[in-house]
Image (cartoon, rainbow, N blue to C red; front, side, top):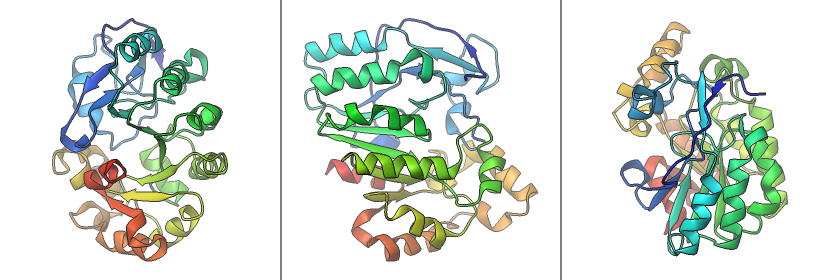
Length: 275
């Protein structure tokens, strides 16, 4: 059940041209504004979508379903907007935020893309609710489901991702999607304290590939947007995980277990499937 206050709204645009960290993609698709998962490292809480929100509520305490998102996407698709498009869904929300159970806007957008497949679709989430849509995802030949799995340590997960689903549920979702024939990616983004080898061995059977990132490469501001998470880690005794380069050894561990061709790093890693 959604814990946030919900503010449904209609939008005039659902596909947004993109670049920057998402270089290689042409558009983002956000079925919701806001996110309910309250991850301490979320860079979006430092961006305009939060600073300009009209609800005057803290990040993760509001969610705005874009109620006409599927209809807008269908209109755009019928005009050819998805032809050749490389879509990232989503960069400023989670498409399977808890409100999706009721509003089903992400599923509605996937129904459109099953009829009008884009050149590429990355569906980025940390919710096992994505399993519900395996049937649709299997009908989109260019879809890749990327599930965030940032640590193997549930204590750390609860420290930095207090409202997000547990690690085991996310790994189970990857396994179910892969069994359904849907290409899968594990996004260890950002890498959080834990046992990198153990995490890699848990992910290798269920993910076709993995992308590893850290706070400093991944937040688009050299770690400045991740200040709250870094301070929380230092206070919890994880000082060595708060300096640039902390993920380098783990990246080599993932390359050894997955094979180098199946491991991407930061923005380049997310873009590699597009090549």
